Length: 116
Image (tube, rainbow, N blue to C red; front, side, top):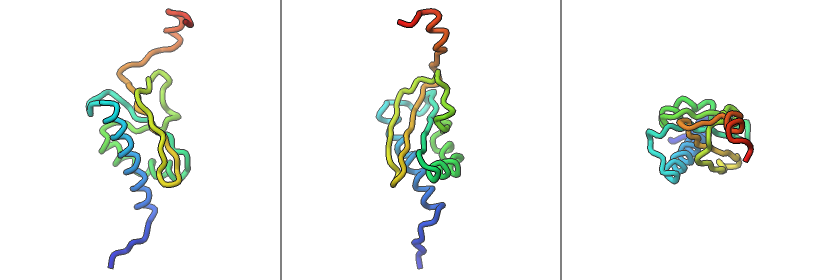
C-alpha cells in the first residue's frame, strides 16, 4: 500500500522545486544563457520557506549551476537584471538574478560624474 502522508521532507522538496521552476522561467524570459555570469538571490518571507531552502541548497546549486544566496547578502554593486515575486502555497518569496560580471562602485561613480 502506498503511504500518502505529507512529510516535511516532501513538502520542503516541493518548495525547492517551485523555486527552481521560477528561476528557470525567469532566466528563460530574460534570455539568459546557461553560461551567463550571474548569481541568484532569494527572499523567503516565512521561517518554513527559509528552512526548506537551507535544507535543499546543495541540490539546488547542483541543478542551477549557479550560487543561490539569501538576498540580505546581495552586494549593492550587483545590478539586478531580472526579478520575480511569487507564492509557494501560502508563503511569499522573491528572486533576483544579478549580473556579477558587471558591477560598479557607487561612490566612485558619484565622485567622477557627480550626482546628475
